Length: 497
Image (cartoon, rainbow, N blue to C red; front, side, top):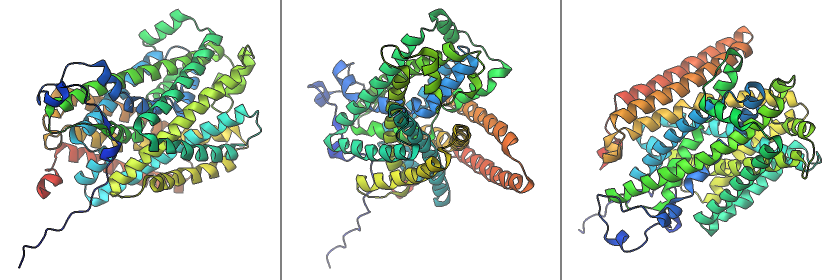
């Protein structure tokens, strides 16, 4: 009898097919280069690696972050700019670890979580990540809908803006058919629109340069601004963005078998991610200082939110050459549209990675969009009549995302620290300790936000019992993730091999 052919394992889902990846090899040195040492720096290669970091940086510029910026400026003035800078640096560290994981392993965080954790824990992680993504997407779509209402002079209601945003997102997703670089160029245009819009507002407001510089360099914190300080740090780390970046870096063709090529990719991704977050930091500075100059110390400072910010800007700074209301609307629309599309991409990678689904991308995009658009439409219809109710909803959505942060950070730090997974590219003891301290700080800060929120919102015995039960389950799962990170079992794929 002929030898029996082994059964082929089902093909696993991947972030990008080989035909979709950007080829970064340039010149003869890439063909005959050293397998151990990274080749010399090349501006051309930096350009070829530029893209994933800017897509990642959009999560630092979404409507939720813009609302945190304007409230921080209106209530705390320039005093929290230093915290914005350090929060951005902490976010950069987390995102660089995410990129490191994706480049060194050739797989993204959701795929590795599927291998590392047992089925029940994997399902819980997936559900929690999906909840965080839906909460973020609701904020982003609502932000786009508010911008559309501003630019249409109130003619387009909030629910119609949600529909337009959903349809626009599908149109923009077709850009992927023309290649990764075209899609990245489109996002670069949206970031450029945000930068120009908010820089224009900065020019109209004319904040004092010395005050801005002192706000960035001199730490200040008071009991009155503690809530805004917690919000500044809390909205920087987005759970879905940690998963997203580890997948985006795989859009470049890298030979994982050559240590020099992996190190080269890590070097270039570190440079472009730093540049991307430097741009996002400057844009956030523009928004914060405009509202600090216009509304800090005024009676309306505590009442400014994303819904009424345009109106207050118009009343304060007037029309000018081009009404500042529409400048704000254009910037907000660019922020909302770009973040909704990157949210869709994150949803595709998360679903495909955790569940190993081999679906066509448009099918996965449809599923991902539906998970967010349906609840967003319900929200738009219910809350369209009240600005105050929209602000309350935004607080709940911020809480929802804060709850999910440990479910992205702990698995990331667990995986990126292990030699069985990362090989020689695992992080060293010093970076590991520093990363865990940053993660602990972010988790504690968000824990304070949750405690403050629920202490004021939880009323009634039944509701309190339900919240306590959910909190106990939540804390138990976080402890399980930490314990698994400390006492790491051998990687399952090594056992299979």
